[in-house]
Length: 219
Image (cartoon, rainbow, N blue to C red; front, top):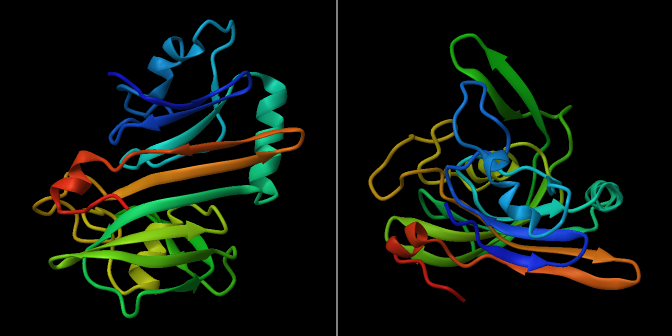
């Protein structure tokens, strides 16, 4: 598997993570990002370390730190909300309006039958997502999200509860497998991390082939 590198310097890599590749080792075993970290050393002695997580199905920008000091700084940047991210998502429906902000607090629940999932809850952790309609794709729509917070499954739940429709192909919050979607249709489009005394880390991942197959266009 060839993993494209979108940004590289002495303390950071940003890769274009393929859809279907877990960041962490699955409990049942199988391929994961760890299998590729030796290749991503790129002449350095240390293996890079993922600073944040993307769901297995989610493609796009993933930040890796190349040394422990960089990892600590990047972790703090995420905690301080000094990281700007945009995501592209295919919504299984059409939103009302063309842009807006979703503020719905989230918490985790679990059951023996359905496993765990995130739900909207007044006493949950604050979660804020800005959104805009990019284009209509027949019965679906292409949405650009700009999350202010980084809660687990935030965009997936905000799509369902804030926009009135799940992400196309979402097996947990939507109808699951549908024609034209072999996965939950979410793509980490861009990532920007400001750094004191250094140029910002800026990366943009091209639109994936499965998005384009639905008629989505760049721009």
